[in-house]
Length: 79
Image 1 (cartoon, rainbow, N blue to C red):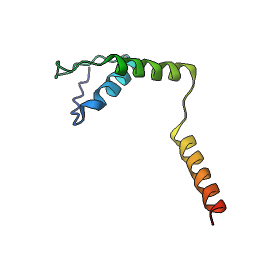
Image 2: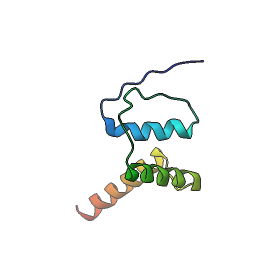
Image 3: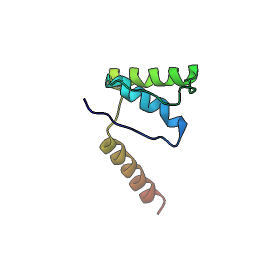
Image 4: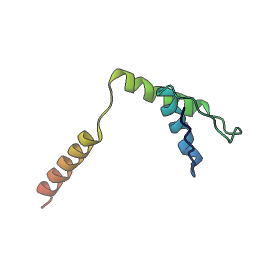
């Protein structure tokens, strides 16, 4: 067994990390037990996981390519 310790400066990042660890079926312990996810946060995480399961995702390469294409089109039409 390997133990990984992660320090998070921004508590808003905790729900995302927890969702990822849950998705990977990894056990974890949050030292700040006072933090609770809101219903909106849980809903957003579950919606994201549903998108992932349904294949409604894009790779970083795809996103970069789309952005580059939009910038290229913008520059060519705006001189």
